Figure 1 (cartoon, helix red, strand yellow):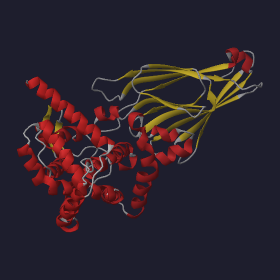
Figure 2: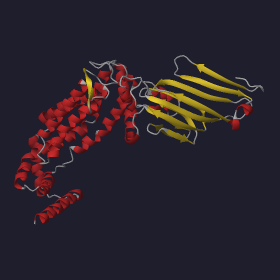
Figure 3: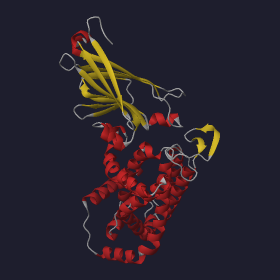
Figure 4: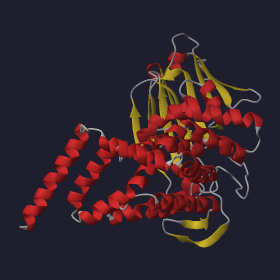
Length: 442
């Protein structure tokens, strides 16, 4: 483009083979006549379209606009429709579940403003429209060059990490309230997953081996959990006797705590290891949802491990469940139910109906929640549950000696006991509640 006074503006695009990035260089002659106050305004539009089978689920996994600032700060916009930015920006991106369109500046944009319109109707658009108004400062000189780059490619962690600073954060490996799981994915899950895939082509088998690795890694915690369960099972007859002797729940709770203290049993021993495994589940949830390597990969009856598997399309929608039947989800729910049933069969009666039925309610909740999840995740959950069932049976039958546990607890009962501060507070609270109920009864 050439002006009447000889000023000239050139756009140069450089396309390299086997590269997702396109260099976009803007060169100017007579910049003082072309740009007002030495500023270049760039208006960038994007209209992301559907790439996955389930557009509703794809919208959930789409980070509508993401930015990376010159001060190494990462930000993404998923709920706000407008955002003004008053600090230097290295790049701005519209990132879908597995692909992104990104505009980069090698000299940083000085400021910008982003406007987006969310798509809620049932169309092929994931987002109706994203508009970025970016301002770049013209370098000094009579013939300055503005060096930009366009990236159109996959949300592949390794590719993005080598593309530009911070672009690997486009891949959602842990964000917001579960951002603490990102290191688990980056330093443990992803390297192990890639290692297994070097030797095995089937991603379904890779997920199975990854599951075995995780269970081996967490086996000490699992063993402690089962050992605690075995101790509770040994105490079950005595706890049942206490329940008959003390029908009042408050008094029963006090006597129950005394029994635990005398036997050297921690009632939370089985819960804490289970809680420590929650970060692993959140890590895998984000990993399988964002792993583009699983896209289009078949395993057993699943046509695509990045999507839910469907063995039956119902033709109508069931609230909370959906319009299809996922077999991996059914297997995950059934095995979860068996784990709950086995655990309840070996646990003492708490006398609380909510606690009594909660383990059976949880698998039903999973049925609705898991039905739309990627089959890679539900396959992992199924394998993990099967391993849990096998371990429960094997450890209880061949490793844990219930007679030795009983003898050890009987020995503990004979030793002088000192109450921990937590036990003292619990007993004081139970005693005060008992006094309040007795006073109300009078």
